[in-house]
Length: 214
Image (cartoon, rainbow, N blue to C red; front, side, top):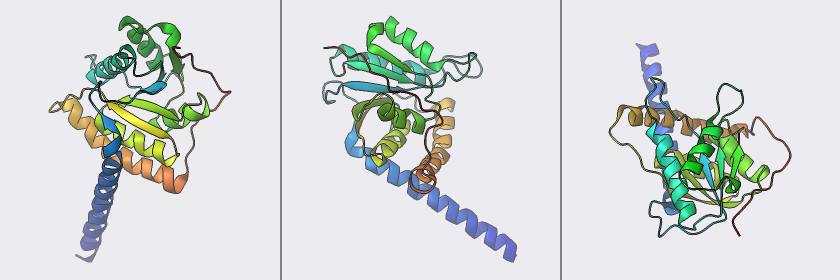
């Protein structure tokens, strides 16, 4: 009984810790989130966080689709002058950024205003590399709200001046529930990375200049 009691208490404390981190990360992002193209402030660049274009079963990943649409809308509205797509292309067999680039071009964004970050292996890498490699400090991050809140938390901890533009979500779907369940653990990991582990991106290389619309 004593062991069971300790297991219960430890589990309860962990759950309370996850809840507190989740609420903290959501709260700090409130004033920096936008979903209306007319009200979002203009910035030099948008950072689009990567995800797979297709689901494991082969179906379309609407998280991806709506991020592309949101980024293209920002550019066409003159809210940003350039777009950096950040995702995983660490091997020749998986290329998030290449697909993002092609679909942005199809959506009407000229290729010369799209810069690829193929080593944005995780959200922390994408955010830190935005400044370290592409010299972005004051920019717009594009993703769904649940993901944006964590990205903004990391960026603000790194003293970046960022806001988030919310891509359309797909609430009530199995994919949305899976993503949001994983987000609880991802937020705890982000908190540890920022304040305890001081985790840095896996890859660094020389700085790259983005080509922005004059």
